[in-house]
Length: 405
Ligand code: 1QQ
Image (cartoon, rainbow, N blue to C red; front, side):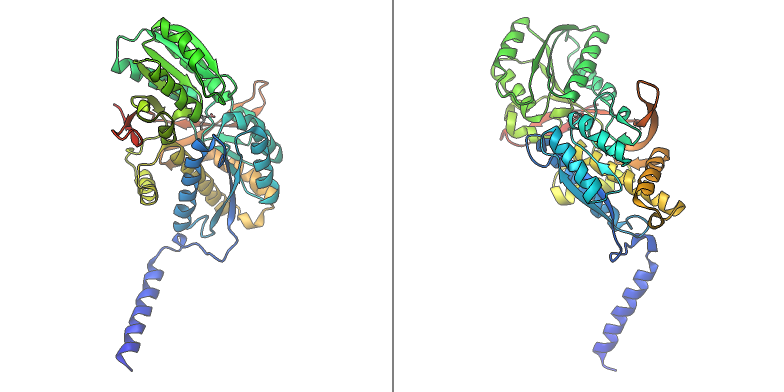
């Protein structure tokens, strides 16, 4: 026997031995039909400033969970459908995923405004939906099949106002701006305005705009003579970023609290160096120290070369919930032995009853009811929230979210 052959044999033997040592659950059987999970978020339009980070989070989750065995050895596949920037696009994306891609469930859409239009379609079709970023009041109440991994504004938003007072305890005079054509912004401003009153601050003025607006001169010139010491904005990324920029250009120097719609580095090109100092409450911190978050953070950084943002972490957590619920269900009742309608219905119950250790921390869901008392979907139970402040670099183009104590 030549040396060459015996070396080859040794390599082959070692490989076989290594594979045998791996727990079988860690290997996906790539030749098997994947379990298809739908992701319907905004990949185009201005809303893609927010949706883009969700696509990345979902893609990282797909690779991450497949490397860890998928659903008991069966791979998952994500079917993406772009909602674009309006309700019709969201409805279309949901219908494609439900009827053409035959998905077991859907992660999406990006905006609450789109969820109120598209979620009823999934609910009526009996398809579980996990909202990765819908924070308006009333999302799980849309229907029994609707869940969210995005904590509601009522819980998250007040933290930013409290943080502003911690930075400047002298703040008394507050002005509020919100986008009146967006369901999330309307919901969030309600929470912000209530918080201002609860904290004994003076609500000087409330100004409205549209998410499609680019010029905010009228609203800003109405407010500045009232001498606000804090400005709070509920809008989306492009409009919110422009409003911040114009507030600064017209001379406002006090603190600014931005809502969840400004919660992305994609506003940096909009307000540039003038983004500096914006306070934004967070439902995720990359610094959260746990096995799953450290693994997610590492996977994200390896691909994106920066720290993971909230919208990516929430999308990842949503896919994780699907994968873990499907894996438990499959052990109880093999997925392959159920027709799609039964599988979707069983998956709804499995999602609801589980506990999940995610990059957002430990989460679970509680049953909710509609206003008429009939059963509705799963509201998120989450423990930990944060506030970050935007720090722009001297180049005025790049910056980061700094987490505050
Ligand atoms: C919602 C939101 C968005 C601003 C997140 C992208 O929180 O629409 O509910």
